[in-house]
Image (tube, rainbow, N blue to C red):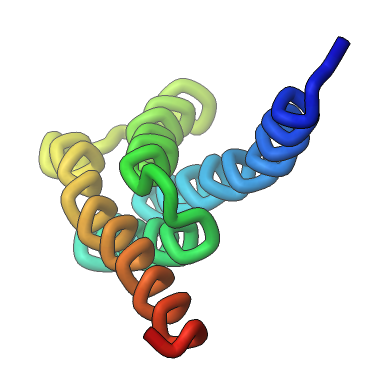
Length: 124
């Protein structure tokens, strides 16, 4: 027999699936932009914006958005290497792993921004 807590936790975990899918889509899109444009600063900006958006939408545990978005960048580069035979440079490979750093700032900044907005709405 399910309790009300069990129903609430299964409903909340089902709603989180869409945010994980959005994070994966943002990571794949950022990885594709990194392969196509090969500009580390643009890649960092996309990671920052994606993680900030996800941190604002779901501020609890912002580190998960960094991992989700950041993990798909090297995987997309690997897929481009295997499927499209795009040869990434060493700098591009190392840069794809360095994309975690702006993601950390974005996710925690978005989470902080959400808590500030919630406090302003409550009038505290």
